[in-house]
Image (cartoon, rainbow, N blue to C red; front, top):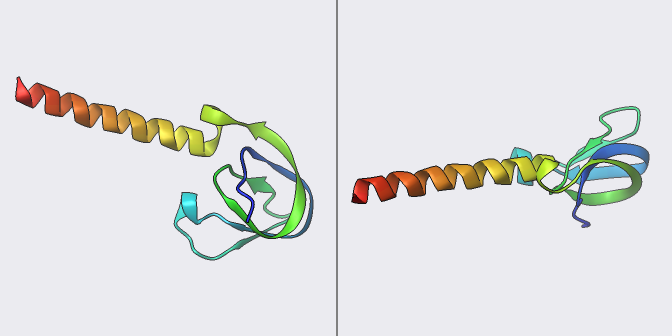
Amino acid sequence: GDLLPADGVLIQGNDLKIDESALTGESDHVRKAPDRDPLLLSGTQVMEGSGRLGVTAVGVNSQSGIIFTLLGAAGDDEDDRRDRKGD
């Protein structure tokens, strides 16, 4: 149940299954292996197994950071539109 804090590439894994539903909406757990589908994204959860991750991005540069930044920008646009309508 560990939450991944960063994006990265799986270097070593042991029967690793990830819940990517927070980013993809897909409810099935995804099996990850260094030789097959090694990319891990921040904001996803480890459901089974263990592994070693080579970090490629953190914070606003990670996939979840980019999504939250875009959502924040969209929210700011909505606020700006509401403000202009009130004028």
